[in-house]
Image (cartoon, rainbow, N blue to C red; front, side, top):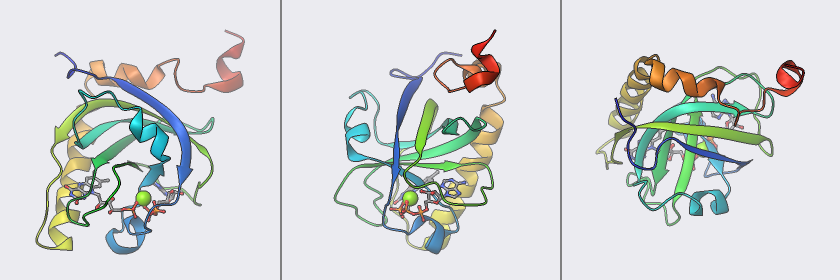
Length: 156
Ligand SMILES: Cc1cc2nc3c(=O)[nH]c(=O)nc-3n(C[C@H](O)[C@H](O)[C@H](O)COP(=O)(O)O)c2cc1C
Ligand SMILES: Nc1ncnc2c1ncn2[C@@H]1O[C@H](COP(=O)(O)OP(=O)(O)O)[C@@H](O)[C@H]1O
Ligand SMILES: [Mg+2]
C-alpha cells in the first residue's frame, strides 16, 4: 500500500462556527477549521472526502472522516475543511484545538438530489473509514508524535 500524493497530511487549528447544518439537518456534526488552515492544504490534495485521525486538545485520538471543498449540495462560497469525529462527545468544542491527520482519500465531493442521499453517502464514508483505518499503515498514524499525548508520554 502506498499513500496518496500529499498524504498523510497533518493540520491543527481552532474549531470555529460553520453554518450549523452538520448536526441540525444531517445528524452528523462537523468541526470546522479556521479559513487559514484550509489555505495551508498542499495543492496536490484535491477536494473530496478523506479519513484519518483526530484529537481535541489532549484528549484521545479518534477515527474521523473529513469533507474538503465547497459542499456542492449547499453551494458554499468558501472552501472548508470539516471533520466528523467518530466518537460521541457530551458537549461542543468550539474554540478548542483540533489536530487531524488526513490518512486516506475516499471520493470526490458530489451533489445530491436529497438530504437523505447525502446522509446515506456520509454513512457509507464512515463505514469505509472504520475499516480502512484498521490497516496497520493507517493505524500506525494514530500514535504519531504530532498528536499531543501530554504528560502520559513526557517522561518516557
Ligand atoms: C464524510 C462527509 C462527506 C461529505 N460529503 C459531501 C458531499 O459529497 N457533498 C456535499 O455537498 N457535502 C458533503 N458533506 C458536507 C456536508 O454537506 C456538511 O458537513 C454540512 O454542510 C455541514 O456544514 P456546516 O459545518 O457548515 O454546518 C460531507 C460531510 C462529511 C462529514
Ligand atoms: N463527533 C463530533 N464530531 C465533530 N463535531 C462535534 C462532534 N460532537 C460534537 N461536535 C460539536 O459540533 C460542532 C459542529 O456542529 P455543526 O452542526 O457542524 O455546526 P457548525 O456549522 O458550526 O460546524 C463542532 O464544532 C463541535 O463543537
Ligand atoms: Mg460543521
